[in-house]
Length: 133
Image 1 (tube, rainbow, N blue to C red):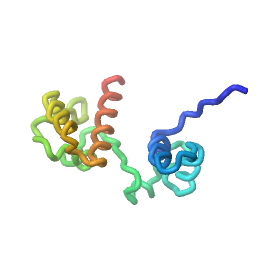
Image 2: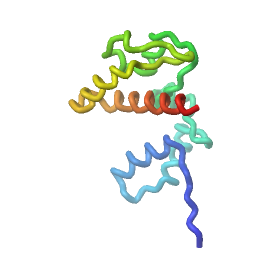
Image 3: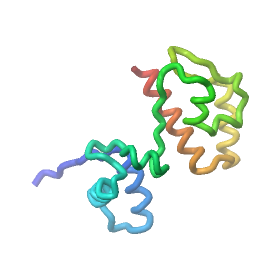
Image 4: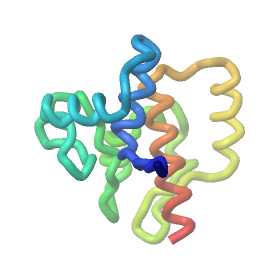
């Protein structure tokens, strides 16, 4: 019998990693069903409005032409750095490459909380996706 590889949405993968550390017998399918049952994700894997409003899931979606203050609401981790490192380019906020060196130093010092690391990961993931498109 041929094995079927199911690709789960990122929220399921993240939740699976978390729960699998606590209970090695948990499966991704169980996590997927539980997240839907608890109204955290929709069938398509996207978070529900209720989950976002309750703060269970963060939405890192950026709209075009946000103010810098709105950008910082999505990525508050960047409040620790000078605003001069950022500018709007093609309707979205980008950072100067020089800031990466400061971020790398802070990463080496473990200066970021788990929430801040998630914000950085989301920002750089979105930045990479935008440059590829």
